[in-house]
Amino acid sequence: MRKQRVIERLIYEDVLLHNRFEGRRWPIRLQDLIEAGEKEPRILEVLPAIIRLKPKIIQNLKKDLPNYPHLKTLVNYLDRSNAPKQWKKIPIEDYRRQLERLTRLWTHQKSKNKWRNLNLRVSEENLKKLEELCEKLGQTNKSEIVRNLIEQAVS
Image (cartoon, rainbow, N blue to C red; front, side, top):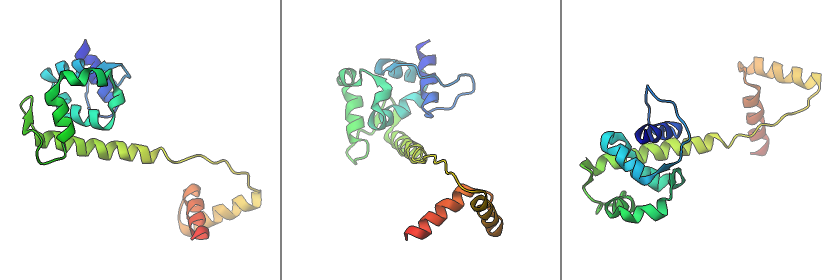
């Protein structure tokens, strides 16, 4: 049951893909992640990256991490040359690859969320002009045209 909850939380966070479970925002603890990782190594591969990039996913992490000194060392030295060569029989390169992947994933998600909606009141005449401009430029996305016009006006 714990393993399933861990997997569902990692699916929710877009860390793992699985065809039998749906993502859910369960609270998870470090011990549960490690125990589930013993059965499913993909969990162990992403664990140091999660601790480094999104520690709030794991409940009581600050209290529990000192109980796992090898993991703490791995997290602290993950991107340095003097990092441990492996942890739990998984080579350091696999942990580094996951750190890079999750950094890209979560950075992209953050940048995606920076868009804001803006409702504008425009006259029929201005709306018609905007639609004509869309046709002239061969675009259907009015928002993109407005963004381009703003960029041109500012620069």
